[in-house]
Length: 63
Image (cartoon, rainbow, N blue to C red):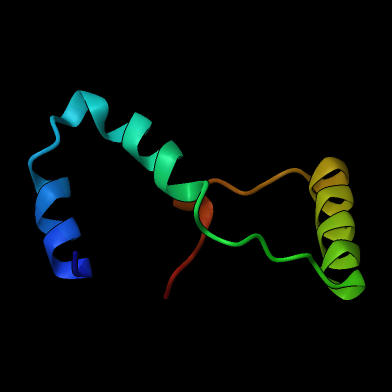
């Protein structure tokens, strides 16, 4: 079976079953172990968000 054939089969899955199919397919994707720098960046970002919160999209001056 080719990847193209698999893609075509996915198109046949009803929308209410897509989440289940996604969970099954993700099980076959190899998991990457994060590097120490990535973990540190996540920690810093979470800490910053906890202290400073977030800015609503509408509050940003895009000009």
